[in-house]
Image (cartoon, rainbow, N blue to C red; front, top):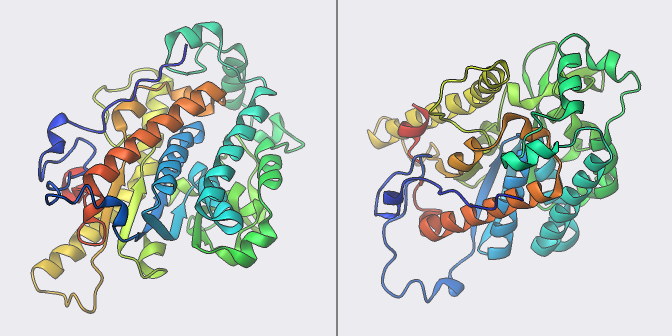
Length: 378
């Protein structure tokens, strides 16, 4: 039975004016009287999106995007994304290209359904015991146990010499990349890590093709290195998960909405080998984002103190949509679980989390940030 309980976005007190949730989101002060009735008439606001990666947990971001698109009051100028976030960003952009917001909702649903169908044909399936634990993991899946052991002693080049990648087939089936490059209505920035230089590579609209999306999500212990124009790339999460700087330099919009997948904070200290490795990955994949947030906080303080001219320097308004409590409750190996019930569950959690963010913070978009950068990142 699928656990469909939606965990809270933060402490209950965050609904009060100025309170800060556990995930660093500051609730907006109460709206002026009568404003709720006029919500439908409010002006559409434009934001930039920053989408994290996280395997199957990217279905949470699918739900967030689905609700923002359905609401209709949020437009997007640009999106910066990594790994599973890069796939969500690509499908979002293609859906907007061919059918506007409703087209984007349709294409996202189609993509995640095909991901599940492709996964159902593979060996990595939750066992009956995994299902009754309700954490959606693959911990007791015989196929996963064998694959996990083999990946520690053999590389993808040995385990998968033909470089079979079902994700590539799904992406090619879902996206006309030529049309996306030609007609995309938003700016796209997909992060990948250059294997030789260790620098981040940003793939932009004119460079978007299936190889770029796969490069952004290329975990080197699972996939062959992706080569593009003679350069080798691994997962972008090592250098930016997601990168914020392209949104600062490559767009005019000051509002950045970060859709978090990887928990920033965990109560428990990991003790198993698998949990230790997962926490190492979470910390390393969040580290670049933390550095960029500190830089944004530093510049904002200089502007506040009058040391920088706010007419010459941009004040970034940062917002966060996250449900760390729910994401912490999921098993580590659930990132590899393509079960459709699980993906739909995550989508609904994402939708509910996005709705709470809209209710609490929409009025502040374009006015002030709603993320406590100091409390969350410093």
